[in-house]
Image (cartoon, rainbow, N blue to C red; front, top):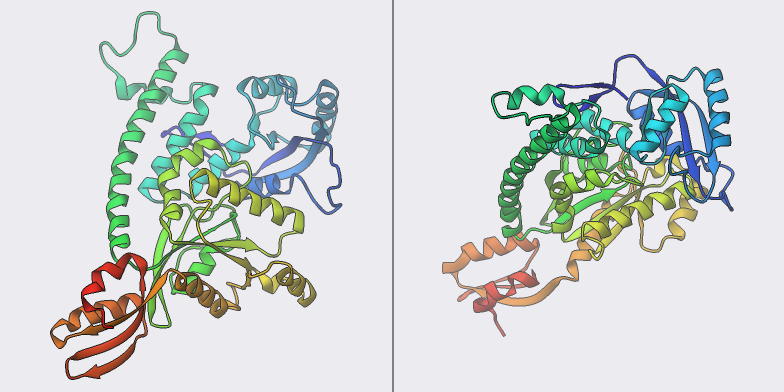
Length: 429
């Protein structure tokens, strides 16, 4: 999809490439007429700077193990490629190395798969040092089975006597260099993860409610974070605009909440990325509550696929049982009838427009209500010598019912269960 960088990753070239999209799918069944099964691949390619000039779908139980497409469909693809002007073929699945090689040999064009497209986008969007390390690790692991001399430039890192075994082939050298680089990246990421753990422990120690925004890529999570907290996280109409988690705070009814924006999920997310970004995704597992942001403007079929993909990844990273609030975003793109029918059919879901700011008050209330069930009512008397503890409690729980008495300050408060024991000495009655 692009030329190799010196760090072993790929970059999208400046000249627009023209891709022909292909997929193998089960029988179409009762799929709605307006459902485009290759719509997401087209959007991924667009985000990567590649124009889609044609598409072909074969319906069969599973892809051909050697060529992905059956022989007849492969011949049809050759004819359509000639008429399309495509200079690249993109498959909507992760191809086996032999499938990729055989397709390229049969078509005479470069062939990339869905995973390569996603990895390329991640490489383009990673800005932090950690993000770049994670993407490089994922790309190296993905490409290890597809060795084509991508890492021969790394030979200089191990140049010297004893670095090449007798009779060692170039491909063996490349694989050894790649494995050495993978080991080095994992060590560096382990250090970064420890540092992240220290920061996470400080946040946990503050006992402030922690909320994570999770959802399909491009659902509007970063825009929502900006609206709720006043942050200025970069946003854009591209898949995977945000890779690095960002945590900001906001106040509601006298209580402070920590809100974290996380990397977007996607259907068939390459397992290399789930593994490489596990530390980042753990921000979701450490949250007390997940706000699942859903793009309300998506067609019903695509929206259902997106919800299922997010549920699947949350289960995979161990956050499947976390309490959740559903937030249907981009309601401003729906007409009143569609908006009404969407919310009526989805129980306690909240409808919002992060762009216009609609529904944010309801969302804040829903978040507060979710945390209210974890609070325990307490009647506490703070002597005047312990007003520092009262101030601490106020910062944690927000508004208090307060009565000044000769022997101290009597308050009625709802205290997080984890903190109840630390205020036992002030219980009154």
